[in-house]
Image 1 (cartoon, helix red, strand yellow):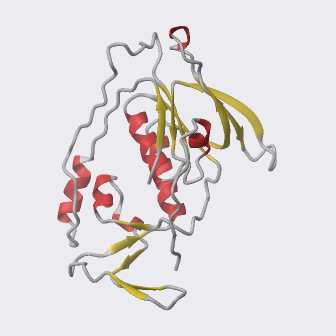
Image 2 (cartoon, helix red, strand yellow; image 1 turned 135 degrees about the vertical axis):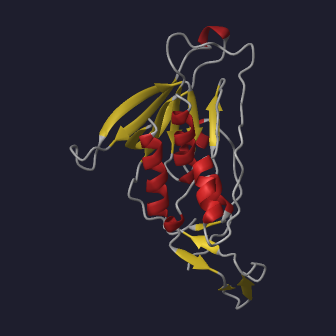
Image 3 (tube, one colour; image 1 turned 180 degrees about the vertical axis):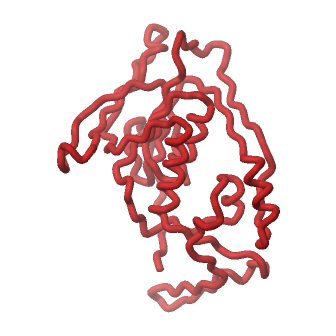
Length: 238
């Protein structure tokens, strides 16, 4: 899970559920759980102050990174928007999760669809690699269906106050540099789909103070800020 963040200043808070950790400790299968922790990112003294309103943040991409970011922001009282094009996306990759993720992201155990302990990968040149040999007897690789995991995290973000938008991010207007533009917003351009306009959708704009790009390897947010090239990796699907 990766994301890029575009912002002037930000103050945030993240924590793990104490009640959920109690459930994990009482479960028959031992699972690594992270203790309660508090992380603060403080704005500098020179950061602009918002008058009579909350910080506005747009999260582009509704996968695990985007969903969890939107939830954390909404919990902190930040005006949060989550834009995702395919709310029912059945993604064929990225379904393997480490067990520590269950505790750190407060996931229900029944969200794990398969428990893998052994896997053999064979390359086109017939080279075989066995995976799972280092797992302990009680350990396994958790396999989830991305349409289930992603939807669960987005729904939880929505429950905590984030506005989930079924839309396609197109581009954004970045404020010009200079002290006179210090409070100028990022203007996002996107197409919103609500089922009434058919497949064409409706062009809209949104003004925010912070943009989080969690829209995958071919991130449009990254291209908008000229984040540069990235390395390619091989993905396996079975």
